Structures are given as structure tokens and as C-alpha cells.
Length: 271
Ligand SMILES: C[S@@+](CC[C@H](N)C(=O)[O-])C[C@H]1O[C@@H](n2cnc3c(N)ncnc32)[C@H](O)[C@@H]1O
Image 1 (cartoon, rainbow, N blue to C red):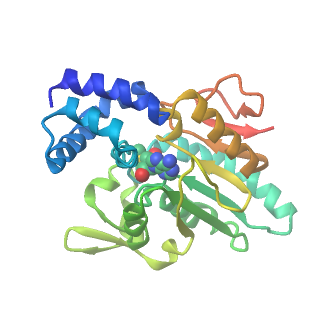
Image 2 (image 1 turned 60 degrees about the vertical axis):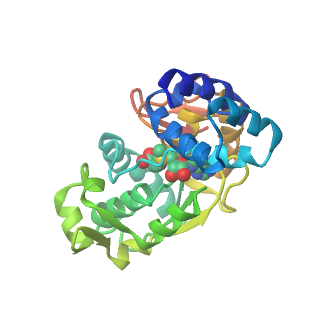
């Protein structure tokens, strides 16, 4: 499909899915390739006939919604944020946990792709925190809308490209190499419990001290949907807990429920 046709189709379709064009601008080719394939699969002549098809078959919108998922991730993505969390945020949360008789610290990774993000938190805890606080527990719930990604996350086998930002020593310690794949060792896997879940509709049942929602809601969802997801995160956070968004994302700035932890970090505390 020609680029201009793809752009105008996405500009028409995304708002109807409560998504925003701006988030998709750089990744539009991925989405358009999927739509191209779908057009061939349906035996249609082009994007115009696909528009007509959408008008006639409401179920096709569900498939189109699936095409609009961007699944790129890697370990220790935005490493400065993870470093800051381990040196500044976790110590505060740990103090609270110690005061509560070593109650577990609970983390939710919302939109976890193949597990790179929640396993990064697990690695960070295992390597930096656990040696100092052996009696303290970390529980991570990681969710994604895509059941195939959840299956991959549970298997936890990765290609070298996923490790670009992870310290080499952490990779060597925590993964077994099998040909070209690196398989995560069981003790790290055990920190994380994976669930298939759409954050537009649901949240896990527990309350959390940290919620990570990076490179998802605040990039791809429209303002109204961002607001409703933000409210869901608010209700799912313990007071004093933090929401972490992506480095390049703009969360609703004048939000009365959250206060920025510090300038230049996408970390927001429930107040
Ligand atoms: C770009 S990846 C981000 C992965 C990770 N958070 C990171 O920053 O590296 C976005 C993920 O969100 C998932 N996703 C998209 N829409 C979702 C929804 N409504 N509910 C839950 N997950 C969703 C996608 O399947 C994908 O795995």
C-alpha cells in the first residue's frame, strides 16, 4: 500500500479505536503491512474496499484492533529510569515494607510484551536488592493483551538483540545459552506471574507499589482512553506507590492524583 493511502486510512480508523495517529506515525509501516496482508487474505482489491468491508462487518474491527499493537521491547530499556528506580525509588518503598513487617512489594507491568520489562525488574531486585534485604519479597504481575506474547514470556527464551541495554554480567549470570537463544534461569522466572489482560477493561485484583505502563497507553491511546486507564492505575496503586511511564511519553501533566517524583524522570507518585 502506498504510504499516503496508509496514512489517510490510519488517520480515519485510529480515532474510532480510541487510539491516536501521533503515536503510530513512526511505526505505521508495521501496521500497514498487516493490513495489506489482511486485504490479500480477504481477496479485496485495496484499502477502499477494506473500508467498505469494515462498514459491513463489525467483527473486522476486532481484527483491526489487533493489527494496531506494537510489540517492540528489550531488557533494561531506558536504563537511566531503571537505575533511578533502584537507587531512589525502591529504597523508599523498601522502608515502607520493612515498617509493615517485611510485607511484599508488589509490581504490575502493564503491557509486558514477551516479559523483558518485568524480568528486568526481577533481575534488578535479584542482583541489587535481595543481597541487602534477603527477607523481603518482590511479587511481579505482568500482563499483556496478546496471549502469544504471554506464552513467550512464560517460556523466557530470547535472542541476543533483546539484551542490547542489559549489563553483560547480568545476562551471563541469569541466562543459559542454547544455540542462538538465551533462556532465563528458573529463580528469576519465579518472581513473575503472567496474565492475559486488556488494560482498557481490567486490572489484576491486587494493589501495587509500582505500576509500569511504558510505550503503550500514553503513546497509542487517545486522551479519553489515557484518562480512563490512568484512573484505573490510580485505584490500583497503594498510597505513595508510583506509576512509571515511558521516557518519551507525556502523561496528563496537570493531573491532581499524581505528583512527579523528580524532574526529568517519568515517575509519578500517588498522592
Ligand atoms: C511497545 S510494547 C511495550 C513493552 C514494554 N512495556 C516496553 O516498554 O518495553 C506494547 C505492549 O502492549 C501490549 N498491548 C497493546 N494493547 C494492550 C492493551 N489494551 N492491554 C494490554 N496490553 C496491550 C502489546 O501487545 C505490546 O506487547
